[in-house]
Amino acid sequence: MLQHVPDVLTSHELIEARRLISNAQWVDGKVTAGTQAAVVKNNQQLPEHAPEIVTLRQLVHAALNRNALFFSSALPSKILPPFFNRYSGQTNYYGFHVDNAMRMMPDGSAYVRADVSATLFLSEPDAYEGGELVIEDTFGRHAFKLKAGSMVIYPSSSVHQVSAVTKGERVACFMFIQSMVRDAEKRRILYEMDVSLMQLRQTVGETEAVVHLTGVYHNLLRRWAE
Ligand code: NI
Image 1 (cartoon, rainbow, N blue to C red):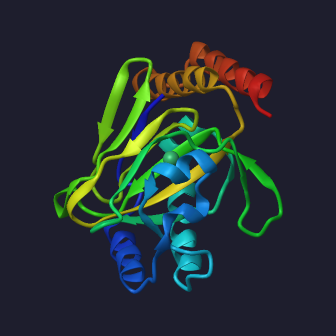
Image 2: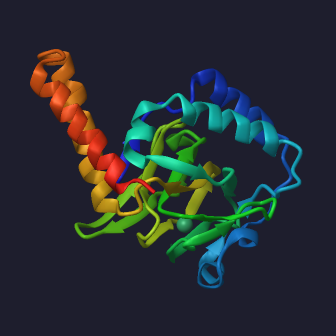
């Protein structure tokens, strides 16, 4: 399931994120790519030792923690600390690849299984040309170029690319998430049920049937969550 999560960052957070990033020293993006991905990866990334990265990560984590749509669609159990990348000039694309299934925490403490990948756009779409995130699923290819502060989440198993940025600069945050529910189809069922239940609560209130259906949702989650 490809999910658009609008307005993850407030305008104030976006300004703060951009301010931090504007001072940053970037390195070659291949530092976090797997062997296959490294061949097609040509962008820049904030290194782990960048002084700005701690505050940037806190800012993104806080925004994710308060976002109900993100929670419902990703059902996060572990989130790898967010990374930040830049596409501009000669380092301006990331060809078709799949994300590694297992990712080591930056402090080397544990592996996180990437079930869900996310891109949080930090540059306004009119600040650059090209730079679409293109994701393949069974219905074909879908291109995303979202408003700054908005995010798209997609199964980490999807083949995807960032098209060449031919003008301007595209800065984004990207994340890998281990979900409580490993299977993408099960996550989709839970998400659709959760959204429908929220709508029912608004329209008919907490009727007996709504209470029972809420129980079904939680029982499925209990059955499927790891
Ligand atoms: Ni990727």
